[in-house]
Length: 396
Image (cartoon, rainbow, N blue to C red; front, top):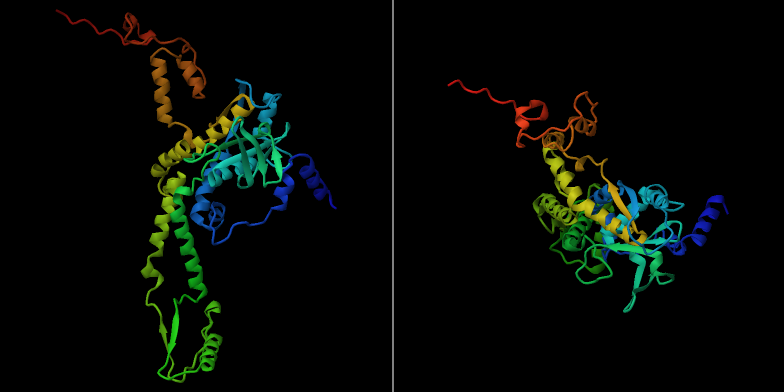
């Protein structure tokens, strides 16, 4: 056994009790084509994959500022610096903070639920699809069970969920409202694959006025397939006798079926359900993209992040804030910033030098005094106090 296998064994046995089960399920696809799950839709459909990835990537890119303790959390003994390390650097021995966030936000979008195990030192993501909530009429939640084999106490797992109209315990997938479009897109994709595997031919019938026995029919079919194999694009010449004539079953083609329009329509519906403006995928000029990107963050990404923050504050008791200064879409326009500071200066709230420093300009001598607004009595007589100079009196 190598060093890596030994170290992974130690992690599975000592740190996360469910890791052995998670590890054994790695690479196992439990869904089927007949039962299209949201996870499989994410894997198979481009629109779903792109939309979910945009949300998850945007939410995962934010770091967190851990502020003062504001309440008693569910767990005790958590230090401010320790929580900062877990959220921004190393949540557990084998994941980066970004990878950890990707796991939990993917679960929130696809499954509607996020479960995180805290062992007193590290945080571990528990795949939501395999977590059962065992309820209790007195304590609300009796325990959490992973895959029916590993139990966790309520104070070992903190979880948060998306909106649900039928459960106070579990949330619903954001893709639930788009299930019809998802199934339609998947069916269209399956049809396309079969169509091209069949040599881009809908169907072919060989007709003859002669009567053929069953054996003759089988020989004719085998001969035809040996000469013309749609899967390999076979175009070898075929000699037909016995009065055989080929006919297409359908005269339609892909262009007639208008697949492109249908795919685009259903893809846009999925984007709308996810809260991703379709223009962000289609591209366009900056004037159109910038306001839509800001809307995407304000209406889709930040509410997801706030759910995570709310769960953190309840579980650990610290005030936590997402750091958004690195997200250009959430920053105001330069002209708006200038107008805002100009208003504060002219209202006498901040000095000109304070405004310059906030805008990252060097302070200038003589600009440290507050201006007195022009609507305050007496200020207009002194231009140095911010008022306008008095108008000269007209000669009588």
